[in-house]
Amino acid sequence: MRVIGLLGGSFDPVHAGHLQLARDALAHLPLSEVRFMPAARPWQKGELTAAAHRAHMIELAIAGEPGCVLDMHEIERGGTTYTIDTLRALRSGPDRDAALALIMGSDQFARFDTWRDWRGILELAHLAVARRAGAPAVLSPTLAEANERHRCAPQDLARRPAGGIAEFPMTPVEASATEARRLVRDASAEAASRLARFVPSAVLDYIRAHRLYA
Image 1 (cartoon, one colour):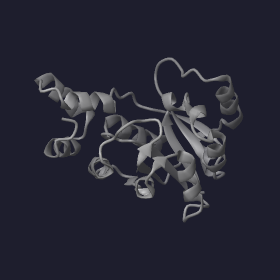
Image 2 (image 1 turned 180 degrees about the vertical axis):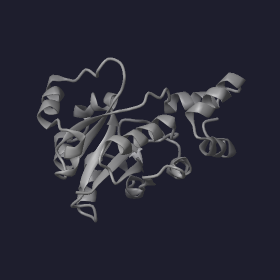
Image 3 (image 1 turned 30 degrees about the vertical axis):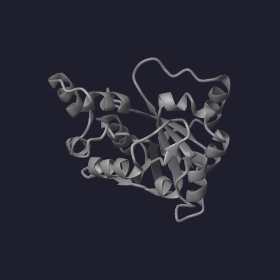
Image 4 (image 1 turned 90 degrees about the vertical axis):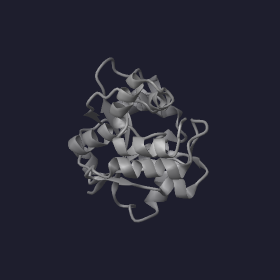
């Protein structure tokens, strides 16, 4: 069964952590591709940079990344973005018979039971959770029970369309969109050096050309 990886988020801006997450998912999971899916308006976040800018930065970032593509589904749908709505739409389209795997970090997974209809999400997709070094995420009793019940090996994602929770290792990357935005506003040489490690050069050139986050 074809397995499609879905990497959602605000990507404001896309950074090295997002790219490494996609690379590690492709390396350790039976994925045919990873789709970067920028949200139109994430329900858990405030104001964002215009969707066209965020999407174009993703295009620049993944230009040299095999297996990575941009998916504009959530931006084109518009409105507040809920993952359950996205999955329902995918299940009614050309990908109805594919296995879908939501790629997320362990910190996101620790809050998964706060998502709208999170149990319904598991009926429509797998979860692929990046395992990072350090202390394991603390799960609520409800989520811990669901994790135990749905846990599977990475190769099992290709055996059914949804319902599994698989872990995979992620190479540590110290990067965050919040820190990247802060560094853009910092004119120091040290900030510029750190920013060059956080953000792909083509994306950084785009940010500066359009005066984003200034």
